[in-house]
Image 1 (spheres, rainbow, N blue to C red):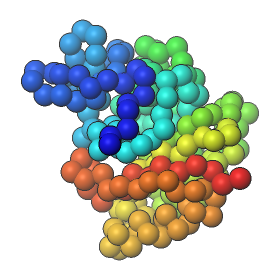
Image 2 (cartoon, rainbow, N blue to C red; image 1 turned 135 degrees about the vertical axis):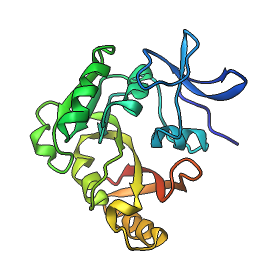
Image 3 (cartoon, rainbow, N blue to C red; image 1 turned 90 degrees about the vertical axis):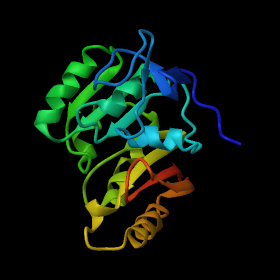
Length: 211
């Protein structure tokens, strides 16, 4: 049975095609109908996780830390239905676009920071219910471990593991096994699923911090 979508995320029809959607200001040329904006799973790893029916545990109004926000495609949808949303992005160019996205959302707070150095934003970010991770760097499990400190209580890590960012020459399945094994030192992994056909060589991971 497919888990329910969080409040604020709906299955909606756009020109005869049904997809997931949120209510908010359009940001990246996505289909809209004046009320809803399509959450394109081809442009969003978290969107792909939801479209594939993964049980993310997302709920409306949750404080969220988003690592690897880029220009704001996915984090804009998260902020549409979430609570305070802290968006960490390392590269200045996409961070400028992220500022424009935040201009339409009072609960979205861009941070020009490196997700590998959470000490640089620990004084700003409150405890959160969700950490969404979409970083294109080697050592993705380490990034998740370093940012575990922000997860409150029974929080969730929702990560998109990029095989080619870890090792462009290795077999993706072997990379996924190694990253998940490393994650298990600090998280209980609840679910994993390849993000095909939306994102090749990516693995969606749902986990919660070990006590």
